[in-house]
Image 1 (tube, helix red, strand yellow):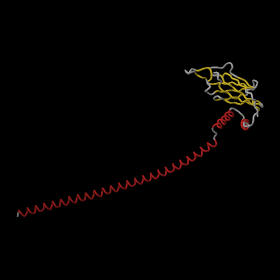
Image 2 (cartoon, helix red, strand yellow):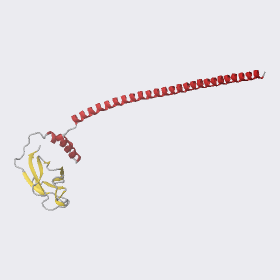
Image 3 (cartoon, rainbow, N blue to C red):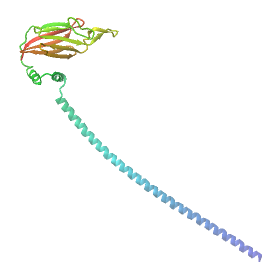
Image 4 (cartoon, rainbow, N blue to C red):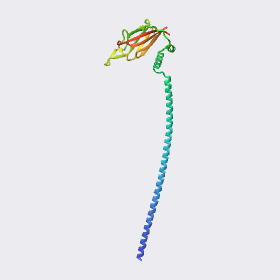
Length: 241
């Protein structure tokens, strides 16, 4: 009798182990399935997020390509405009001697010269002129900040045109200033006439200047003299106009 009870008890224990094993297996199965679906859901969510990010990046890339195309178009228009302006500049802006002449004309007008008279002189410049064959040449000491004394002027046209001038100081090899002017630096010449009429010529030597008195034009050429501190002035007398 006790033996039968023991067998029943052993059988119950076996059944319980089986049930416990089944429960454990079922729990693990449910846990695995739940983990799978959770992982799948998370993976799907991440894939969706990445797809949206890729879409945004593609949109940004498209916008950048469009902006780059617009910039390239603007750059091409700018280059074309620059080429046109360069061509126009070369065609319309004088260079070389023409530019020097234009600058000289502008300077003279700025100093008060009559534009109509300047235009007249330019248009008649190519005309045949009647000039004396003999030239008159004189020299004088150019004034400097350290020299203003005797022999610092010359006159032409029977003393009707007085030429004076001033220049920058020269220096010795040690850099000490000297009283005479430096012929390698710009000078300023003044041409005075009775009544207060006065004109100037400035720049590096040699310089050229013209003074008109009535029906006579005096054409001056000014150069540095071989004697230190002196400049040489040569005058040509021509009929005007």
